[in-house]
Image (tube, rainbow, N blue to C red; front, side, top):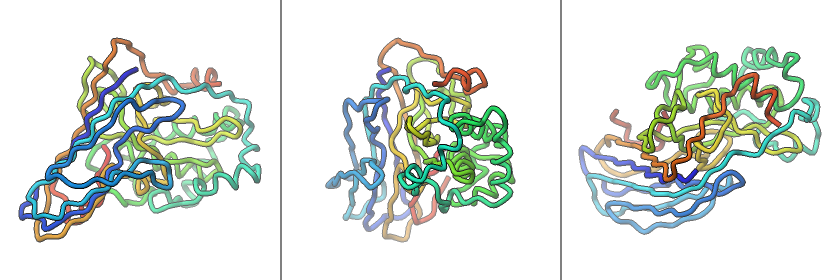
Length: 316
């Protein structure tokens, strides 16, 4: 599937900022499931851009505006070609997750972080999911993803970045980043390496994963990937009960949201910015691929004004 993506963020200050320094992570990755065809970034007021790849493998576009400015608009345009992910088999037993070499290679994705710190109650809840259908590594990840979809109700505006995942689970509401963080925390609590993924979803709704027409206007999206011994990273979208497919476009991954925020920055000045953000995705070919349901059949088949800190943009 060929997709053209336009990510746009605009800050309007109620008093001019003297200067601002920013990092943008909006460029789709190139990997075995997708290929970046083109990418460019426009900044107004204009600024010199420094681009590099960070520790986690994500492209970062770093820029600073050193003149006084009442508005800052950032536009990232990308073209990407996606395809279905490789199949995963259920031949990797859960005991393979305890292999010392496997654990050593994935240690960074096993530890709790600011957004994925679990308690014993959450760990016990995750352990309870490992019934007869979850004796393999793939089944473990699928059961956790499906359980997260059951435990949370999608309600924008009910959570904030930095809120403990245990509190989000107790409240039972959240947005895509909360679903992803909860799935990551539960996977790690039972010894399965997992990582948070930031990206785009070609869908009429972040919550339903439905596709209507060839143009959608959404926000950035989030899902997670679980490490399967001998096979790689299994990508799942618990917000929509989907196995990640060609309608998903990955930007990057990390331990949690803090490693891959779409836009992070600081500014100097007395004003408070108002944030406007949107993503427009256009399908450039007529192929229609329905999303793959994350259901037992797949289990069998799968082989408002902001603060002055401007540091994070919530994914909804």
